[in-house]
Image 1: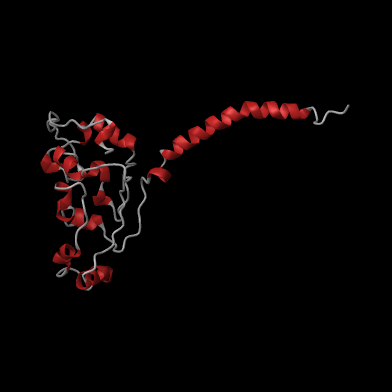
Image 2: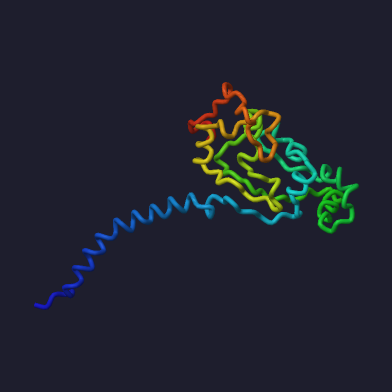
Length: 211
């Protein structure tokens, strides 16, 4: 009697059974690597904004401190964005005819806020409080990078759970004196003096960030 399948089909089945676990393992590794890649974490990405705001000019050239525009970061969970009236405090006198500032002037006179697009975003199930971190001496650039070198703001860090836990477990590299929190390119002084870590005890348990 002629067999229903050719002999070589047995070899195909055995080979497939041997490769199936390897394929499953490879898929798992691929998913893990993908979840840590910039494509998933958003590290390095930027978005189109309604106004071309150049942080290099405002921070580096004009020396505007972070807290002038993002003052809510010192008193609330969210850093916030400046109101148009704050922008016009300067631009009612500087670059008053610039075409790039037309959206700002229109927002101000029409009393309609500028719809800025968030660059650094955490999932809704993550609780993050800017004021707690700033009060502890965490520098702005620890999470946001050197914004004084960015013509277009981008996400400088992966902002994953692993990134946050690494910092919580070893906060010393991110802690600086309160007077230096907003300083870009901060370096500890030559004597190696660093702020006290006695009162810095960030949580590493789940409820610290997931509430």
